[in-house]
Length: 476
Image 1 (tube, helix red, strand yellow):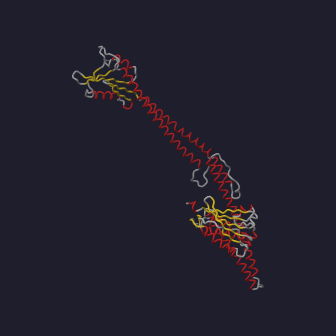
Image 2 (tube, rainbow, N blue to C red):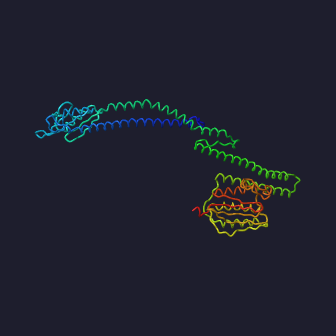
Image 3 (tube, helix red, strand yellow):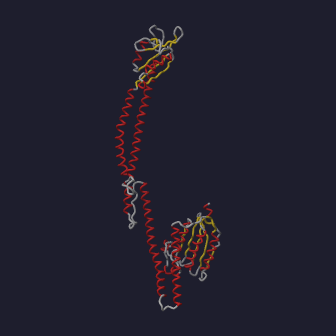
């Protein structure tokens, strides 16, 4: 993938390769250092264990021989030394014995020689000074020798082993790491480039397919699954976004066409009335009638524009919606009284069902407006029957049902009842002053309160609209 938004931005593949290469290099260096340190520590442990085994062997041989005089002793110079030489390690054995004057005397054993008395060490003949001198002599190479001192009664064992072979092995291992680490890093970077390129192929395919979808071809979708769960999620998200854009575009196109048609009709009437009234042959009474007709059309147009503005503000979340508990009974009583006034000149009965009051969670003013829209709709379609109001409950929700005894609505019309400018009978709706926006506004106001409006209807059985809101008790 190549950068699209800015020349200063790196591509995803380059970013991933760079980060993985840095991570790989750090890991390789840390691993190499860990291997070298581990090898060095393991070598030191092996030397210590080897010295311990040698010391164990020397200690086991002590006390097994007699001196040339036949007296039992733990130092037999010739015989013991011959045996110890075969151990193959650098060692010194000393023995501290009291002299005739009671002062301690230190003897040492060396191969093929009898035990010899150490006359002094560093200006002192104390056993501690002698031991320090021996350790210094064995360790004169500094780090090169590892020295083990073990006390065995009167005897002190000093065993040393050369570190040089192990040190050389550590140095060789370090040099090998320094030589092969860059090679491993280069190979790892190439492998990372190949792996990243293959890994982002589905993402690149999604990008290409997205670019191929133009504003005039929103019916196309990105293929899924892609083989990678995260990329598939991205593809599904883009598909849902395209679907929403398509619905919005279709709705906008339909809205533009419908609004243009709805506005053209009253404006055409206004123009015709004005042109007719401007004729010099018109009487004052005829001119007044024409102006009255113009006023009616203007009033209808203003009302439709107000409804459109209300819908736009609601969809843009510009309306202030309260959300607190309120009683539905008082609102239903108010709406039913207004409904009786609307049905005053019709053979229509308005009934308030005797149900118990209930509290809903939402905005009482918008709830009243929704019920007035539903009631007005019911009055227009109820015919010579009745309109009833009832409170219903269902699974933590509470609703108000507005039912009419009209002719009902055919099933094919139900899915589109809440669309803007949709009319089941366009000609009759125009006669009643409707623009097909009342139900759309009602549904929008219900959704702003996290509610909804449902409808049940069938030809010959009337229609029932129910406004559902969350019950106040369920939300507590």
